[in-house]
Length: 529
Ligand code: ADP
Ligand code: MG
Image (cartoon, rainbow, N blue to C red; front, top):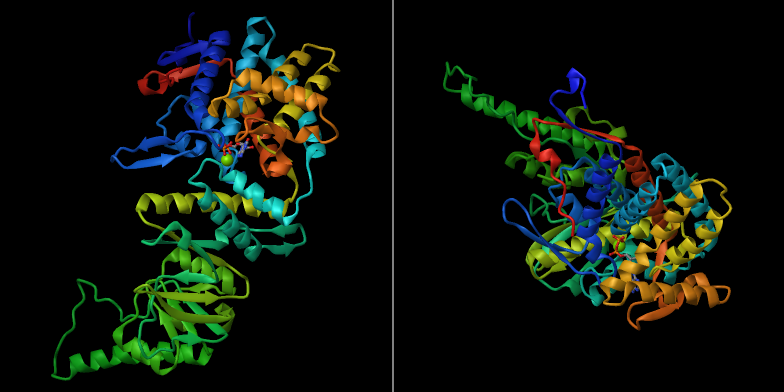
């Protein structure tokens, strides 16, 4: 092949071999997370460059930490990351379905069906899948949402941790939900996670309000403050720091004293301004000088210094305050409101607890070791994300592969109505969804093919709610997933199918891959299993 000069430093694969390479990369990637799917999934031990280790069962964590440079593999990892961002769950499923779609597409390509036609078939099937998915949903009650949150923690930590964290996540989500014109919104970033080493997982609890491991800066300040106004400073109340090249000319004995007195006077002016504003509570990102501490205590203001920017932001949102950098410029408009602010000592550590109008909650995460604590934090964050999404759309679907089998059956019937070759693409799409029950079975030590056939037969012969029949991994036979409490949020399943399709279609459309030769590492395709 004679490449144009512009492509001289480039390696090029085109047409079928480009597609084959890309599909292999996608499948190798799916192979890396396959064994983590479901409650019986295995854990992966990840080791970073510094030798730090992390044991995880979470598909997206595995993928994001892997050093994969193949561009197509990266596209799949992105699909999984997007899933994680939007839905907080379903990341492994997304990658598995996408790779399976591509593998099925490859069979068709070898039979001379053009990738563009397959992609069209995929799109038709996906559109129909979303309609069917909606019909398969059930309205949820509180207890169902609790179960769905617990399902999202399947395979992470032990059972009692899953129960505790899912309950706390649902409680936290309800605490921070707000009604807007566009329905309920629950923003998980409004819940703070405060890790505390020592203690056991069962000490993990939720506290209303924002909790910071901070003490008020002076003993004489009130320990407890009732409702009042708060000012947040993106700086400190300090004397101006002397610059290295600054000089004070001492011409008479009193100069230094008057210089110091002037500085204290400036601090006093700032405190006086705070007094006029009538605040009861003050939080600074930076320091507060000794003299200012006493002045603040004299005014009965409760003050905290060296508060992390992230906490100041949470406070600002909770109290409706604006962060200001210059105390003297603060106006009453910048102030926020709090309901109560108190100092409490837990164990031997001082804590500051602020309650505000706009809710906000803090998870006090406990665990005996750093590893356990990390797992509690990550699992709670995932469960919270799911619980929040579920408040925004309360519909649920049956898990354990039930929905995927039901969807595949309906899509195969739909495919038959397509007269052209796209029919083959739509069928390949339908079959790909069954990867979920197959892999769930495989990871539980069951025969994937027999189990899938059993499940399909059970749904065909079942009654009205046969689409609830999925894999009961405890009893190793088909069971009603709604009765077993294996439920999944509709939004998560929908997003996972949409993301998988998007990634598969974009990979199918690539028929030309140009590798820049100067970066040989780019050609690393992960090993096939
Ligand atoms: P993902 O990253 O895709 O969320 P998970 O490892 O969390 O992967 O596995 C999710 C799958 O496991 C879902 O299909 C869910 O229905 C299924 N699952 C979870 N708990 C159970 C259970 N107790 N019985 C059967 N299937 C389950
Ligand atoms: Mg999951």
